Length: 223
Ligand SMILES: C[S@@+](CC[C@H](N)C(=O)[O-])C[C@H]1O[C@@H](n2cnc3c(N)ncnc32)[C@H](O)[C@@H]1O
Image 1 (spheres, protein in one colour):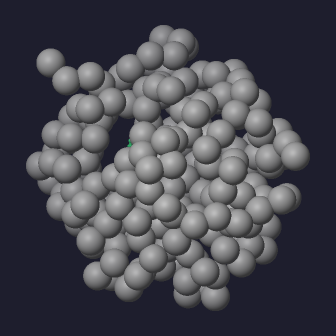
Image 2 (spheres, protein in one colour):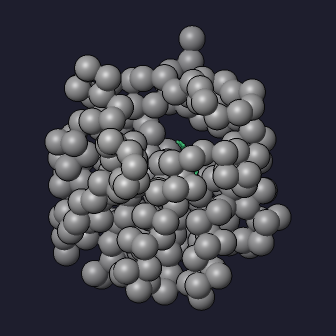
C-alpha cells in the first residue's frame, strides 16, 4: 500500500491528460468564475517581475503571467504536465518533486519576487517545503497560496487529515486523489513555522454562491 504522498503523486500521473482537458476547456466552474481571476489579481497587485509557480500543472498561470510581461518560471512533479506547459509556450518549467525542492536536489533559480501556488499544496508536511521556498525569495518577496477553503471542505469534520478527491462533477475519467485537509489555524501555523508572516487573507466568492470558493493567503518572509 503506497503512502498517501506517493498515491497523491501517482494520481497526477494518472490524471494528467484529463486534467489538461478540464483546465483548458474551462470545465471547472469555480476556476472559470472566481479562482483563476482571484489568484491573478493577488499576484499582479504585488507588481512582481520574477514569479515562480509551484505545482504549475499544465501552465495556465505561467501563460497568463507571461502575457502581462512577467518573467514566470514553473515547477511541477509530473512529467506529462511539465511537457504540456512547455509545449503550450512556457520554456522555463522544471520537473521536480517537492521532496527534491526541500533537499535542494534540483536547481530552479532564486531571487523571485513572488512564489505562487494554486491548489497545489496538497501533502501533509508543508513546513519544510515552505521554508525551502522562503530561501528562493528575494528580500521583501511574498508567497501567494490559493487553496481549498477549509470551511467549505470540512463536511462536519474540522480537523487536519487525509481526505480523498473524486473529481465528481468534472467530466472525464479520474483516479481519486488523496489530499491533506488542514484547518485555517493549521495553515496559519505552518506559514509562521516556516518563517512567514501573513500579509493578507481573502475568501474569493461568487456573488451568487453561498460560500467561499477558495482561501487565498499572501505571506511575506520574515527577514
Ligand atoms: C490541482 S493541480 C494544480 C495545477 C496548477 N497549479 C493549476 O492551477 O492548474 C496540483 C499540481 O500539484 C502538483 N503536485 C502535487 N504534489 C506534488 C509534489 N509532491 N511534487 C511536485 N508536484 C506536485 C501536481 O503534479 C499538479 O500539477
